[in-house]
Each structure stands twice: as C-alpha cells, then as structure tokens.
Length: 180
Ligand code: HEM
Image (cartoon, rainbow, N blue to C red; front, top):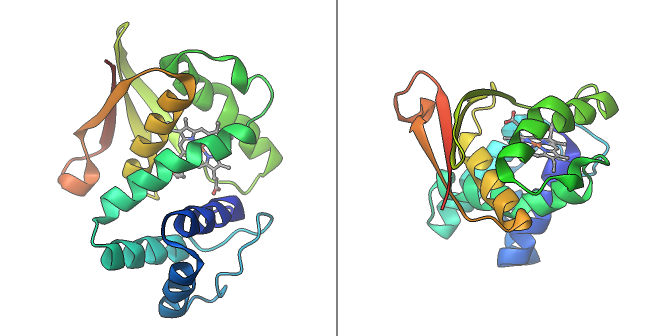
C-alpha cells in the first residue's frame, strides 16, 4: 500500500491515543520498515494489517471497528490531495461514481503502482445505491468508513451497510449506501 496510507494511519493513531501508544505498537509489531513511513515509498500491506490487529487488541475494539474508524477519519486527507475536479461534487452517489470513473483513475496515473479497489455499481435509486467492492485486500470495512467520511465532508447523512460480505461467509462484498 502507498506510504500515504501508512503516514495517515500513524497520524490517526497518535491523534487518538498519543505518540507513546504508537511507539509501543511499533515495538511490538517488529516490522521490517521499522515504521519510519514516508509518503513516497510503497510498503507491504501486511504491515498495515498487523498494526490494525495490534491496535484493535490493545484498545479492545474489533479489527472491523478499527478499519472503519480509520476510513472515516482518512477521507478528509484523501479529499485534500484529490485531483482537481473532485471537489465539485455535492452528492455522495455522484462522488462514488466519480471515484471509480475518474478519481482513482487519476491516482493510478500519478502512481502507476498504486492499487485501488474497483467498484461495480449494482443498483441505484434516488436514496439507495449498492456497489460491489472488489479488491484482493478485502478492506470492505475501511471502505465503509470512507463512505461515511465522504458523506460527512459533503454534508449528507447516510447509513452504510453490507448486504453480502466475504468476511461473513458471502461470495463478495456489496456495500449499500442509504441517504437518511
Ligand atoms: C477523495 C478522493 C480519493 C482519493 C484521492 C483516493 C486515493 C486513494 C489512494 C492514494 C489509495 C491508496 C492506493 C495504494 O495504496 O496503492 C486509495 C485506496 C483506497 N480507496 Fe481511495 N481515494 C479517494 C476516494 C475514495 C472513496 C470515496 C472510497 C470509498 C468509496 C475509496 C476507497 C478506497 C479503498 C477501500 C482503498 C484501499 C485499497 C483497497 O481497498 O484495495 N477511496 N485511495
């Protein structure tokens, strides 16, 4: 995963639980990068999964909750580095289409080794949209959190759930976003 994700995870954890907690987690994780993350480098995905697991253990929350909280927090950071044109959308559903059609495409153009998920849109009405989240990283709970962060940024209230989830015995992950 790109360094930006790790740098932001570090900031997120320090903001919530302090620098000392982050250092303790790093010590325990014993990572090959030693956790000295910079945005320009690509790091092993397993490092992020290990750190999320340790945070969840120590804070007595589930990995799902940890991923979700990080996604919700990180959206504003992604938004601030989003390509021009990405800030023109005032609707969550329009923005989600734009992520697939243009924003993640631009991210890949700038960083050819970036690995972004694919969204396959399955159904849409004026207040309910569902899409298939496709990624070998299986970060659907992180994705749910990002959708919440997006809605917060745009000022629309939504509920996000999954009608199918690979982590719960499903064949795929289908996110359902409802405007409330
Ligand atoms: C503000 C616009 C956005 C920008 C600039 C952006 C950028 C990025 C970047 C740089 C990565 C890391 C790629 C890598 O590590 O190789 C990423 C990953 C990801 N993005 Fe976006 N993103 C945006 C919006 C969104 C939205 C709205 C969603 C959710 C619907 C989303 C879902 C994800 C997920 C789940 C990942 C993790 C990788 C994976 O699942 O395979 N992104 N994005």
